[in-house]
Length: 481
Image: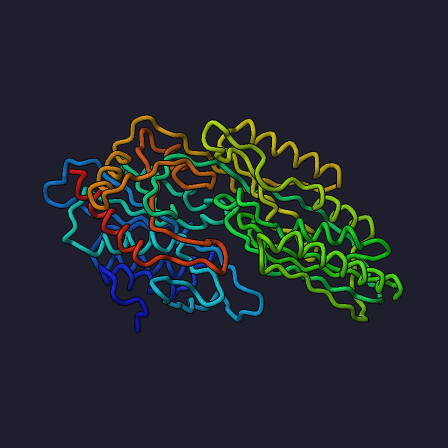
């Protein structure tokens, strides 16, 4: 393989990351990468286990002198969020990523990079491959379907694990140790809709160019939600029209960047009035949104066509539900620097599937507030005649007053870089909660190199940060004797 990343050490770390990028591994499509890891382990005579969910556990014996140290679990997930820019031709089911290296930054050409959490996979492979590193007994745990509900970590048989220490590598900022996270779930509103054929003037609308982002890490950044915005636009012009389609977002845990809608008018005059109204709306939205989202664009065009449309009742309930749907931060803690405690993200809205659906990702580190969010969504669903479905529910991870692994990372970071490591809780979900819930007295931390704009096509990895983090990880492992 002709590797593109050059000049960084250890070379194998970056080679392994490129190997991963060459294998399609979106959520639900992890078999090829899972099998690749099994073969990787067998070639090195390492104990390996693969379960029916395609989770992989690879074990490596302790180095000489480390036999009596507590077993360490290194952990990350092998699936990635598959997002691409409109117009980019890329099949995430079949195609490897087209990598671009510029000025020490790695990104993919028009798609997500999958550094979340491919960096963890490459880090574990490198540690397993290198017999010169000093370390306690290792259990490297590669989980599946993290991005769609921590599914792999939830189903993994944790009784096979002996670890007393867990180093999760799904954090996204160098020099930060995460020690607590929120719990979450996927909440779906579903409705069987009736459709009928109509001929008339079809008004096609598209929202493009929004920043989007991670529904946990970026939820407090006031980024515009494309679905909420399109619901607002359609609500302003839908009078005397019928809804042909409405489709926005692809992942419940990604703030939607794009949304499309089509309306059918049987009267040409009404269609032209809607076009005039859109010109005013577009002007107002540009003034409102461009200061924080400079690439925002609202496009629309009119054509004559025959389309299948939703009934007026179903269309009205769908659009009204979107307009009234809660979205964004619901509660902050002013005593902890306005840390986000409770939020939800309206991540998917689609009338073209059966049943039509509106999907949210609620998060909270306080169970009672999460319950309150669910009750609010239940009322919204009942008001507009939707059925509800909850899936992918996972626990939060509580802060521990005493943590030797946290102390070890702080000590190594200070020694290596002459800086203090920041310790924080995050609003995003991490698999640490599931492992700590199942494994008594597990001492855990989440760490990683700097990743930017994850879950979007702008995702990128700072290569020197990746290099430094590997140095930190191996130094910590060697300190655990």
